[in-house]
Image 1 (cartoon, rainbow, N blue to C red):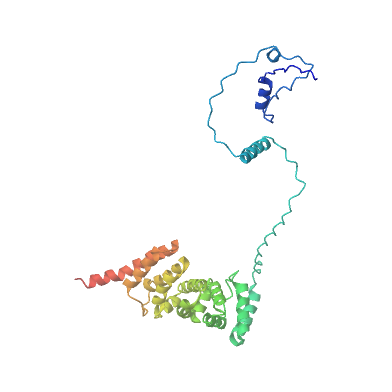
Image 2: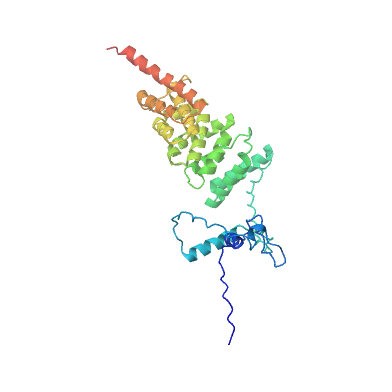
Length: 334
């Protein structure tokens, strides 16, 4: 018969050590880890001795209502917190960046070749003679080649002498009406008219009338050069007389004031000033528009884009236009 051992009644008690351990989380942010459990050889502290009576039960804290999170959400948040609290130094990436191709350097704009040196008088006479033959009896391509040669030789350095041959000037005047050669012809005509001797030759060759008749058909820059040459031709007596005698001179100049740039307006106003000034002492038959209409056109042109010299010429022209109006009012008082 087995001996029955008396039953030992064990009393459960709450251990403060385990209670503290269950509430502490070992994490990277904990500055000091909790103490480890005591071994069997270590002496227990007085508060944890077996002889001491169990601590008095404490009243539970009032329940607080917390929204319970799902288990998956809480675990993921704690995991993310534990990972984000560590800061890892990123090692240098062994993958080198892909080399970007260097952009091609912009091609430098090609500079224009320098103009040829000034041509001597002897060579210029030979050039005039050769160009005169080509413009007189040459084919159309030969005439264009002659104009290009004259442009390269005369435009950079306009020659003061010798005087242009009349036949060569007539060839230039004919090319003013040629669309292919008009641009070069206006450049050459302006370069030649810078010398006073060539202005007489140009007027005799009919250049003044040709500019008046072709001004509206030329391109903008070519028309400006042609008007500049016409104003220079008006500085000689025969040139002013030829412009005053032309029936289309005034209406064409009025139209050119409204369609050209500031320089073109200046040249057109200068030609009109020559027509209405009468400063050459001759009574040419002037087929002109009424002075009132010309004055209104000049005032309208001066309100727009106009150069300083153009405004001074316009003021002189308005003064010249007002004089005949005042004389007419004095003769016909009402």
